[in-house]
Image (cartoon, rainbow, N blue to C red; front, side):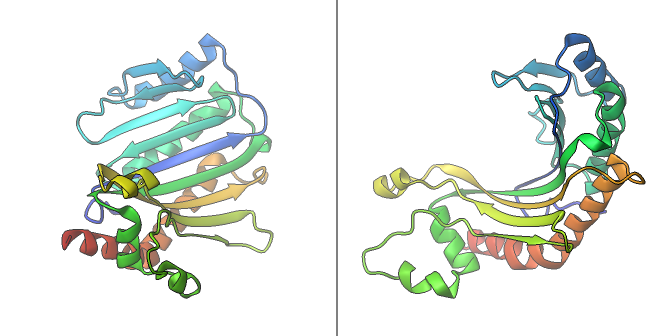
Length: 247
């Protein structure tokens, strides 16, 4: 597996396991789970509880690349920002999923969904909506509307979601998220913000008896890598890079 750091300012590979039932929230269980993660990655030493009830363990962020893991009421998450390679991030997710059934009593039956997400951030000071229109174009069905005299596009966040099997249990979504608001357009003041491209592969429902969380996650990661390599890089990431470079 390769690194994607050449295609955006920052990139990250995240994993999320959503459960149907509430996860254990007692002190001993959560601390044991995070201690097992820290044994694998000793630099993950920053532990805290957000106001939302989410418990997080992470490395120092000031280096620009760091690992993190989190437990919410019905969700276990793992992520790595700017990893040296995608393989490093996937190995971290594998180890988190390896611990989850034992430390947090998660059964394959209890899987609501499992997803892997590749994210790419571009730092840009300017109108993100106009940037996207220039870099990626507009759907022909909306192009004439965007050309109405005196009109200004204030939201342009293209997305496409597809099913990869007949029963729609495995789905993939590519989307773009902008941070330009109507206030920015009205005032003409555009702060330096990040425009994000997301590619998510998601598997819904309980796992089969022959599957594990790790094997299901690896299949999703392979799907993400294939779609990024074959479609996202040339159709989205490179055009954004080139358009930002000439601004």
